[in-house]
Image (cartoon, rainbow, N blue to C red; front, side):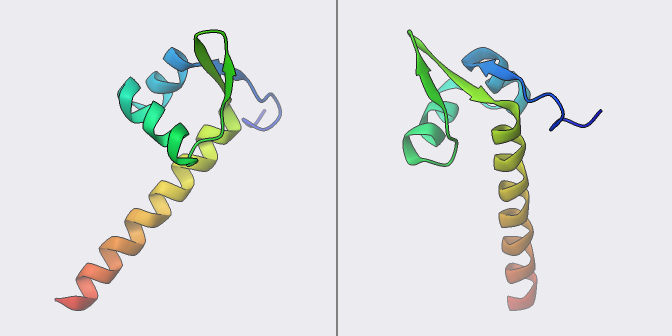
Length: 73
């Protein structure tokens, strides 16, 4: 079963553990619109598929940056 078959909804704590980032960084990404999340009480809820999308885009951006810097040298 792939991650899309069961799209879990994660809490703030679960999301920051999944992404391996700090809570302030997670909140910054939400504020900037890089991660789509829903406010729930005092915390946030986010779909695991959204975190997967965020990581994929982040990886692509890093690869572009590495490629651009190696072509300059």
